[in-house]
Length: 62
Image 1 (cartoon, rainbow, N blue to C red):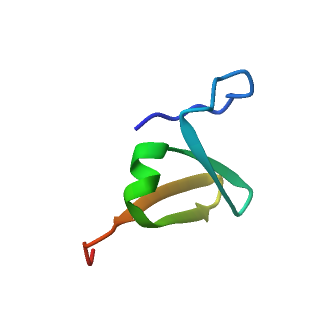
Image 2: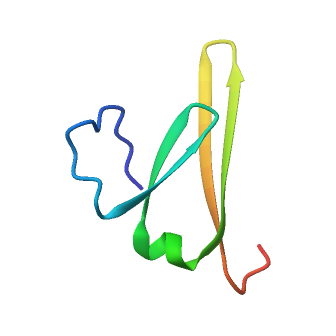
């Protein structure tokens, strides 16, 4: 996993972009082709923020 808050000049050609709830997630095209769904969960408490991203793969129930 990699986190970057500033990727404007990065080469994004190897990634598929998923946008949800004001967040842009870059997912490798290899993973995106095998994923049935990409789930993004954001939580906030006071000034803390959590972000989790889960990929559900084809043929797997969880």
